[in-house]
Image 1 (tube, one colour):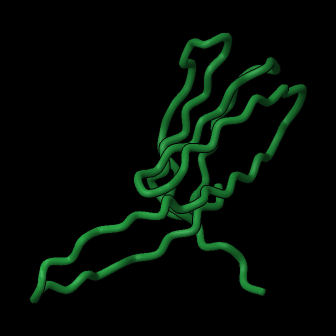
Image 2 (cartoon, one colour; image 1 turned 180 degrees about the vertical axis):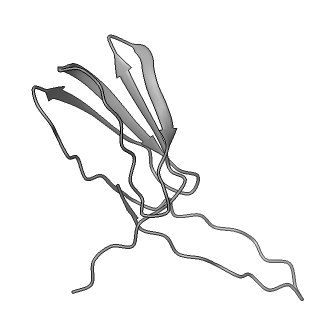
Length: 93
């Protein structure tokens, strides 16, 4: 079984008590690294074409969280005479 491929440029948002305290994008390896103090946070990971992942985490020490995003099924009508080129991504952060 092969490992999921990372998805770069997924937006990561970190909230504490509803307030956005940190945000950025995953790197080419699908990683987002930040330093935040121990507390309870809500993390959101967003990428066009994928379902948004949202989760509450209580951090007490160094922590690694792996998030897998699920693709949104999209139906696109294709006019006659046109071709579609697709790229498939699997997010691992």
